[in-house]
Amino acid sequence: MKENLELILRNASEEINNAQSMQNLEDIKLKYLSRKGELNSIKKNLKDLSDEDKRIIGALANKVSNELEELITNKNEEIYKKELNIKLNQEKIDITLPSDYRPQGKVHPLTQTVNEIVEIFQGMGFSLVRPENSPEVETEYINFDMLNFPPDHPAKDMQDTFYTKVAPNVILRSQTSGAQIRQMLNQKPPVRVISPGRVYRCESVSARKNNLFHQIEGLLVDTNISFGDLKGILNEFVRIYFGSNRPTRFRASYFPFTEPSAEVDVQCIMCGGKGCRTCSGTGWLEVLGSGMVHANVLRNVGIDPEVYSGFAFGMGVERLTMLKYAINDIRLFFNNDIRFLKQF
Ligand code: DAH
Image (cartoon, rainbow, N blue to C red; front, side, top):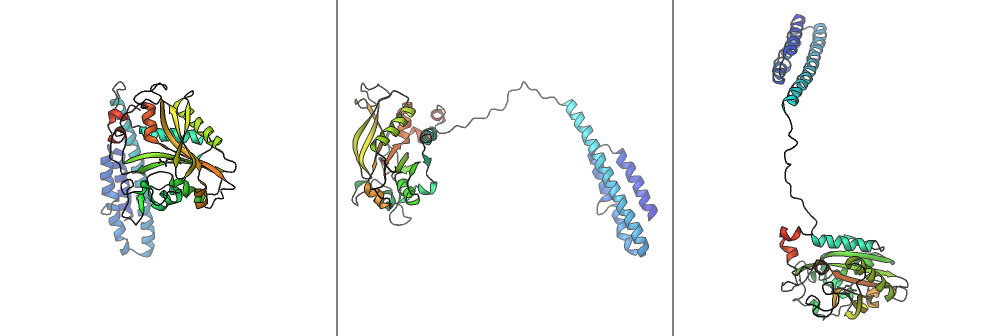
């Protein structure tokens, strides 16, 4: 048996040495080292030997198989390098060939606007509300009642708001203002947040209206906050978003959750205030709603209106994008026509 092993070692070594390809090596491995190979058939017969011989022959068999493994690994590497070199010498890369064309994706214009506006407000110390404080599927209670809407407010009508079958009074939110409530329920003042997101209204779709659109809500509550702070922040926002030297005006308005309330207009970017079709001849474009947070709203969330005051604002992302780029149909944002989208 000892002689057999030595013979196997000699023959196999020679074959390995002469191997020309990886396939050759595979065959040699099979012949000598596999389960049905020559070495294994010797190992299988060990059981017939005396204990003494078992130890000696067994050890020798292991040694031979280790040696052969090592020889094969080394030879394998040698052949691999040789084949690689031949390949490298034969194959040439033509670096003058044009590269593969891959269409480049882009950020959707509405997302670009959201990012831009969020950045402006972050620059003024606002942070994003946590997503859990701004759900799209919302209760009537948060979307309306806590925001001081009277129970018979027309916005609550089935015609205006999408009701779900999830549970009674669970709706698709009609405004991002509910985020104000959730944020204040979860955070004591000072609060200084913005909350972008989708809102839903049951409208007949037209060039100006879609069932789904986007808003950005803002809220600041602290001690000694006045209407002057609201004006300062919102003027600064308009100045950065629409460019400097564009006059604004604050027009008295009404929202249930603010008192006093104001709509902010910016001088028409199309006609510079002379009056045109875009501004319906007024010279002004309405860009957002705002106001001082109503004392009832603060009380609803357990904040003392004698100690704290604040302001809130809300703006439509589609509208702000349409005004900035002179887009005349809101549906363009949702049709996913690449010819439109790639312009931004
Ligand atoms: N939620 C209002 C809307 O959808 C917009 C708005 C107006 C938000 C005034 C505010 C605000 O926070 O103070 O029309």
